[in-house]
Length: 217
Image 1 (spheres, rainbow, N blue to C red):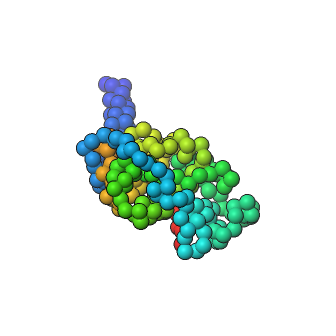
Image 2: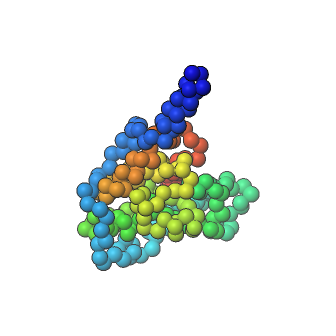
Image 3: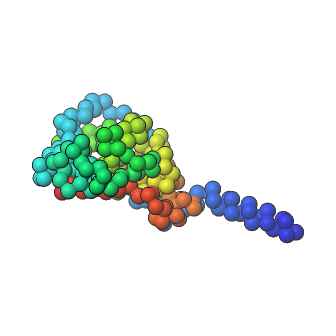
């Protein structure tokens, strides 16, 4: 009987660990489209601005986001001139690996192409420019991770570092709310799954599991 109880307890623990029960983190508030994602013809990157926008500090958005990630005081200093011995290391929020500033790209958390398909094709130009340069929608990551993600939404791609997935999902939800982007139901379902179960309960306490919000001031 004791062995049976031990087996039963182990079974219950294993079941709780894998069953995606709802958690406070999984109740992400996000606009939902009842339709699957479909391609809206006519997309061009230039519709979201010709490259990175300029910030008030005289830097491009890319320069400002990189300087914020590595805590460099002046974004006008090219990364090749940074004193790396005095610069705090920066961990890729998608992979959990240390990043070299020479091997990074700036990812749009909701990709521009995905935003276009989800309604940005009907936005005025100033809203598209704001979206493309909004630090809420930007994160420094490795070139490899950024290219693997491409223009995918959560039903097709998630960060390799599983501890970052709930934070990633909630960040997407915040962006979608801010810009009133209705995301396809399969992607919202995938987002909620990342914050459900045991993973959702421990996500707020997992070190390194937060997608950083960079400043462009």
